[in-house]
Image 1 (tube, rainbow, N blue to C red):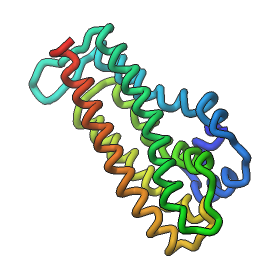
Image 2: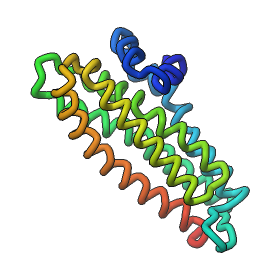
Image 3: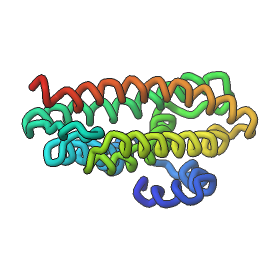
Length: 197
């Protein structure tokens, strides 16, 4: 179970990924029992933060978003987060095609879900949406996701560390592009939602 693995991923990821690779978790189990809840953390936090406190940047008065607009944006944001995990899983699957022990697409998406855990948890800071604090938490979450990717790929793919480094670097580069697109859309939705709806 992902919630059983969250603490392990944060404290001893190498050992935790060995345990995860031995489990026979299904994609439906990952989504219905774990990922749906984890992806809701930044969504609910952003909803509460933008409707109750508003985006805060320096001396500019906070920009609040109406409940209706925030609900609409939250649904789109939530769907994008869940789709991003699938997209990164597909990237891992496509990059793995040159290896003999290529994991299934389902296993790749499950792995992507586990590596995204720190990004989802960093979304808690959106409860009080200070722009600099959200950026800092996002950077820390991204760095820890990269660490999980680099430490988990060799175990997940059953390849040596040097091969894992190259594989992880390629996956990270594409994953960062996906994240940048997601962040750009999110900023447009949450930041300008107060003005357009």
